[in-house]
Image (cartoon, rainbow, N blue to C red; front, side):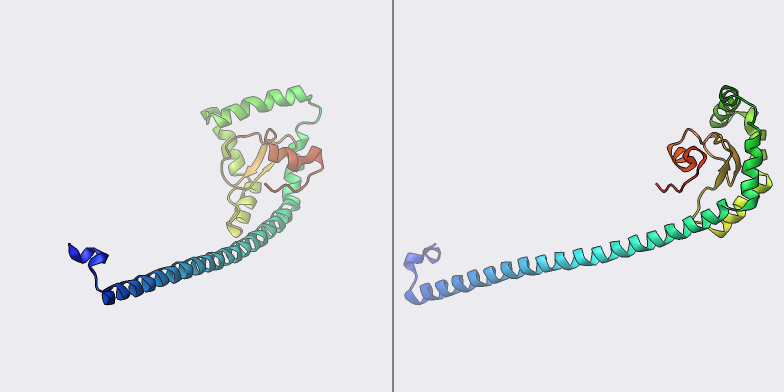
Length: 188
């Protein structure tokens, strides 16, 4: 075990050991410095690259959203859809709010429960000519997953597929879009 005891080493071995330790220390310090420098630069480069990707994704999403809004606005201004909504909304004339609620609420509850008694209504809405127009639109714009039209009370009158409920007027997005009958764009 004499070899491990520096006091027994010759001067030459001690000098070689000191030089070796100095070199090892210098190499270790340079390696650590390079690692930290390159790691920081790599992180910065990766961060800048990810920022570029995220900005491109946001731009592309904004362009897609703008295109969807334009297509949906055009659809919403279609005379056939406007006429269908007006015609369906006229059915409420002369009825009190309580009478309207009493008529719609049981249909909405049966719709949500998928009660067999409401399936004729579902089929009538799914298969009317306005729903066919909506389906044609969705086929042309497949990014639109679900398209439907409601009357002034928020009840479905046309749809591309069965919605979760018959009455949409209790949804925040519907109320914001309807905007007390004024209508406005709402993106959420």
